[in-house]
Image 1: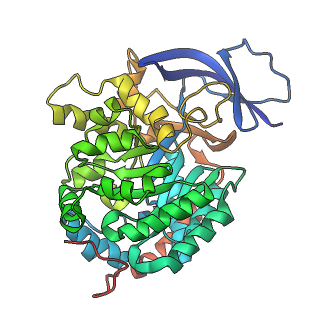
Image 2: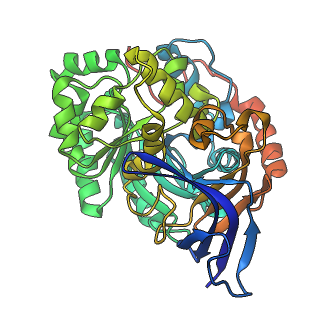
Image 3: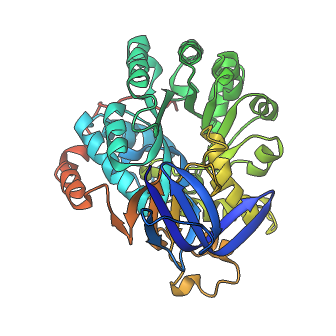
Length: 442
């Protein structure tokens, strides 16, 4: 069994609401799992173990991106300063009509490279041409929960194709890939279509990843059509009977909290998108007090511009403090709980990811702490949230495999990926009048 020793790193952990900083530690990895963590020099190590010197580096759990559209890196910067309705109908849905499966493959590789460079080792991705996304994930070495997004107007035949995708890729790439169903949203499907998705999910023993209650207007639209909130639509369609990853959920109604708390749900929170599109923010403290898991997400880069979870950590803290007009809201330990174990709970990986502990999967990010902005280190946790940047990520390990070392990608050829993406951009950036993959209801 392959073994790796991370030598001399500092470790940041959160347990029972408290932050713990342990300097000069060794992390022993055997195969895909963390075997032991002890002060430097205390572990009996054989000569066959590969050693990774990490003195001065800060070890944190590999970051979890609970909701993204990774191939949308292909459209970065093409929908700026527009309303959410125009963002969908005049930009995104027309641009996405240009995509081919090969475009999605290369776009995914570019997005995965960006995430590795930012310390992200797990992504829950919701997009199209997902066989190509899965292939890219397999090659890159990350861990992923993948769903093929499907709209109600595409019908049962398209849904059946996404079911076949699940069957092809479930547990692939040494177990790094899990596959769920991905109906787009209650506002782009119907209750009958959602009911059909729930039926397939129960039969296959998988979960559902869906957008819900993103804006106040969407909730009003649901009330106009069905006389109930989008969350209740999901409940009555039996979607919530399976593990459900809810993207955004900024506008739950009062009854929705208990509904979500009584079912295997989790919230993906992407604060930069909400700021950029003027959407508001989610009631994170209320979710957590109700026992509803919350994790961090980037959403797609056309509404965020990066796939950087460190940035989302900072914005989570700042936006929640600002919304409450209370600087004591969302303290450091809670931010880290959401980013680490919260993300693991949202993607149904509690007890396996989100912490550096023996027996957990070996997903680790090592950050440099020597920039001027990271010094002095009175409070390494505060530095991580409020000072660190993706550029500080030095080394990334997923499933026991080193994906990046000394800022050098080991599983991906970034130069070739950028060249392949570059030669597609002129075609991909065209918006053909009258051509779009779906319509956002206004």
